[in-house]
Image 1 (cartoon, rainbow, N blue to C red):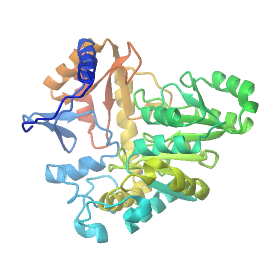
Image 2 (cartoon, one colour):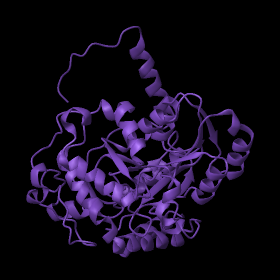
Image 3 (cartoon, rainbow, N blue to C red):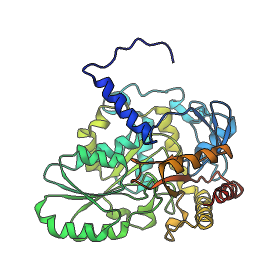
Image 4 (cartoon, rainbow, N blue to C red):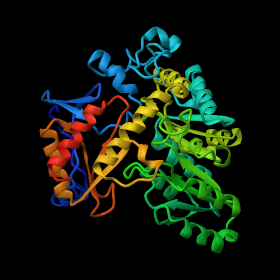
Length: 419
């Protein structure tokens, strides 16, 4: 960092911030950014240490394939996708990007001049994957979740939101003028009791849930929620962030896997996990996407996604249905790890690539993460407030780019620590 002469905050607020940081430090929950370079299935630290990466969300190995080819991350040079590749390295070249090559910035918001042919192509491919009339692309998954809920759920409405929903969904509920009831995690009885007693008091009721929960690797009881929504005339909004690309015959997520796509009105997703890029989306009817285009502030007042990213992501979404071999391998690796580590899961959850190893204590979890790093593994410690108190954990994230030998190496190392 360069020398700075920035003035301190006025009114004693600087001291308040310092006091807050001190509380986090004493609790062992102080966070900091760390410089890491992705290289295949490894990350390289600033001091050159090479760690086997079990921290990222590159479920189908899209980014691993790009970075393994060059030894470093280079978005501009690697933004295309080899359409012939369904399992090996995802390669690219600027020539594959057509008019998007070299256009690193959209220059404006979508409603000004930021919505290029590459964004339109991406939206069309997403709608085709999700089997919806339309889709709209956001600059991040967070913006898609928070913005769409804050916009669609209006005063006089009721939201039922799962207790362990992602922060972006929670913030959308908070920003909305609708009343929000948080229901215990996956508690169908609570949802039904609330609908039975309160449905008639609201013009519209929304049930909001992640499909795959990011810190637990379990799934929402989606088929049952859909049935309740139909019975009580409620509307489903789901976030498929960790389901898209991973579940379903063509990678359409949990909705496709459970054959309820036609019954879930609003489906939110991200381009930053299995798809290996950046951005978010909402797939729904044309009326819904038009309404978001007119009134959703995070969409209207944000510069559009980079055209080069939009075009590359569109190519990946286009071939997602052909990546069944990767999905099978990913499920096999996840199932193997869960079985060996005795992590309970339903049949469907057995193949989810997010596996929590719950330790409990913040301090013990951080110490174990450090020991794994010393052994050559990058497995992040996840602590409150990201997860509930006394449930600090190692979040093991598996990729189709991993090998069974690499999974076994992690298992053996964890078992040395009596896990």
